[in-house]
Length: 420
Image 1 (cartoon, rainbow, N blue to C red):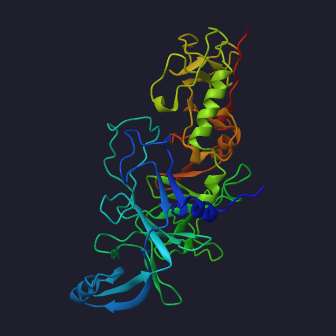
Image 2 (image 1 turned 30 degrees about the horizontal axis):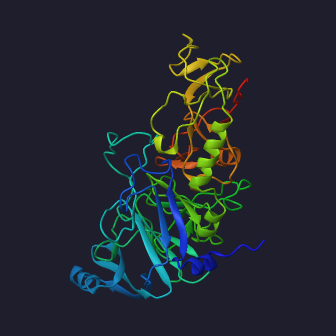
Image 3 (image 1 turned 180 degrees about the horizontal axis):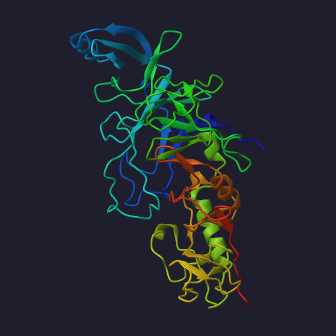
């Protein structure tokens, strides 16, 4: 069967070429208070009407602050490397007609295309959970896409600020490479992990690396903001591939290519799966009442017919108030079907289609949060170590960022069909 390329589809529909999408882990389809402007849970990168990319040009070695100001006020993009109070290296950047640049960071200033704030684990929560001090950089990273096929996307640490400058102060990790060009790392770093085998059910986690300001790949520093850089990894690149993860120290983004998204279930597909599972009229094996997953629009309020599950065994029930054992923790119950003791939680359908590696039915739940998705998607995310804090890694639910637990981080659900 003929499958048109992304470019041919865009030409047929007169749509702009889509380079890919960034999806923030920990949100189930939208931010808790809704997506607004440049602050949302998912950001599509389209070919710009006019190229806005930049490439390095002249290098200046400056010994006075006045000379430094004179260069940065010329209106060009530039990267300043402060070596000491008396010496700064400034690399001027000039327009590049062949690339488009997109910037990501915490700042709401105009150079930032996609505003990202710290993800709070279990993000079914609301605005009351305020981050007191963010670890995400105001101008965290930039993604540069080739304007011609195959539309290669590359990631670089740091973004240009409102005065078109990237400034690496005295304390930032920076160095001169053997070929003479300057490079450096941002305070908390930009980490990237490319899965082995793309973003499919067969993929395996890759190795987390750090990306420099000029796009080179390094092994991780000893701790997130250590002064000493890791080792250069010469056989790896900063090219993003379908399923690459980008960690900004406070939020992790998933990169999906346009072609990858063509093979991913859509919101409509997930809604059809929800209706299909509800049409089978699963029942509570004890109360015998029919259960139903709530509509995707009502994904924060526990409803009367909502399925609940015992996460140690996977038996699905309706809500009930028995099974408490005095020797267990508050949310632990004894399953009336098999007597297994474990967490008892409401089940929520995973609605963010970008996190699915296949279009299989929702049969597995992450533990301990109860988000439900296909078996292959649950198993994929259960094995992915995500950065946490300054040097820890753990698997987390992609829909709410809760740290996973239990024997396999997810469980197969056991539904009971109607008896009639």
